[in-house]
Length: 78
Image (cartoon, rainbow, N blue to C red):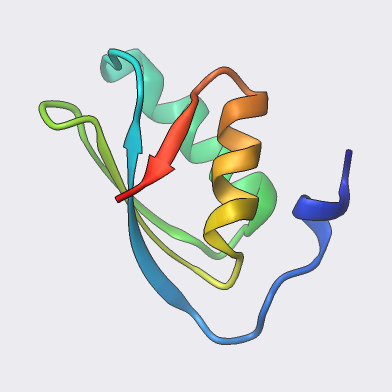
């Protein structure tokens, strides 16, 4: 399924995403890579203690959370 990884709105938006499982420092690279697969220009910050990923992107929240879930990181927009 490539649709969510290929098209997105032009205006950047910011949203926090809550990862629904425990994450560790080793998760930072794959989570960031998944988001950058959707939008290579996205800005990503990860707070391991709260399991919150802050994203500034041109992609939709649904595109990001779908990609994260498919890569093993089920998530919800806060």
